[in-house]
Length: 114
Image (tube, rainbow, N blue to C red; front, side, top):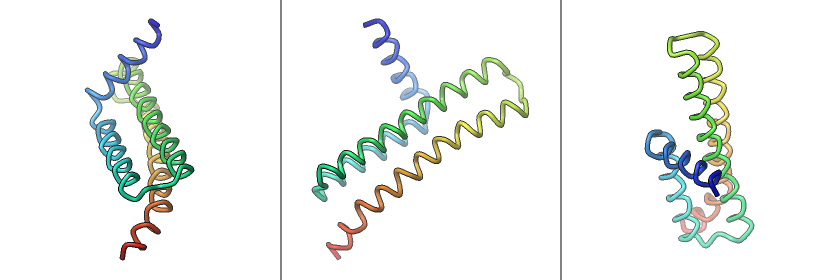
């Protein structure tokens, strides 16, 4: 139970301190609303849920890497910059994948309305 509480505290901390995590949560709410409005199918919901959690997990891991880098090397260092950039790149890759998934699911439904 302690480990679960520690993990929950980490998620709460990231939510409170990281603007990008809040942006991903806002995007999550919009996608869920769109899914309800467009009555997405069960398999589409599964893909959406997986994409959401991959992006949120990547953002959380990126935040942890950034905190660690700042702790280990508070001053600017070229190698720390690379580590942070690569970590942020993982978030970008997952977000692009989620965006493409959203296009594949929602564009046909939007075109049906037009």
